[in-house]
Image (tube, rainbow, N blue to C red):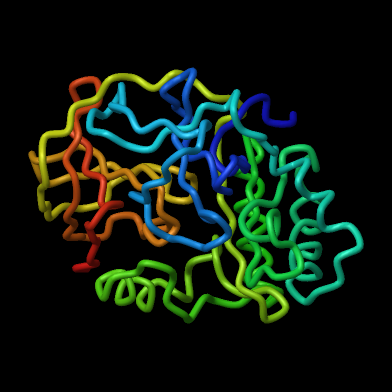
Length: 286
């Protein structure tokens, strides 16, 4: 079923920006939002300041606290990634052809109304440098099997580069896991990224507490590492029960591996959760 409301991967066009909705749990009626173009200039900053745009609200985050950039969806034009696939029609660039091929493989296994495109292919179809695909709902599990099979057959190849904003620790982690990761890599020589988002509509976020920064050493003893967010169960430490990340760079961590990680420690419904996404890192120790 086509996603029924703005969630992870949806594209927003405002007066001065183009960007993306983040997550499934939202500070409704506002949305978590990350701009990618500000007045036509590309940015990778999550703390960018934009003045005078009626769709953007700098306010206290009602769920995690602190001030952040939020989106008023009633003052923006929103585009569903499933509908955004239409923008690929007639596009014959190398990146467009690679996107169409990846979409064909995924749509052959899951319903085509839960598979979409996001990223640069939406706002700059002919100038995009990579492929960003998103799959929604219960189809994410079958989609992951498709990605594993494509890698086994050699249709896709491992990612060997360094992603935007990666630290030295991220690059080291990427090098160690390159051969086993299938959520990103290359297809037809073009970089691709796939986000598997298990929700289909936004839900109101729940109140959480930020406890500060922390570093933990623990074993990954469960969880699901291929969805957005990836959520891992931690064993052998009392500092945090879960490790959670919205970054593809921290997906597909092998089970039963000893890790060391640093990030923001949050408390969700009485459970401590370590989030390495903002200035943190993860290292494999075993």
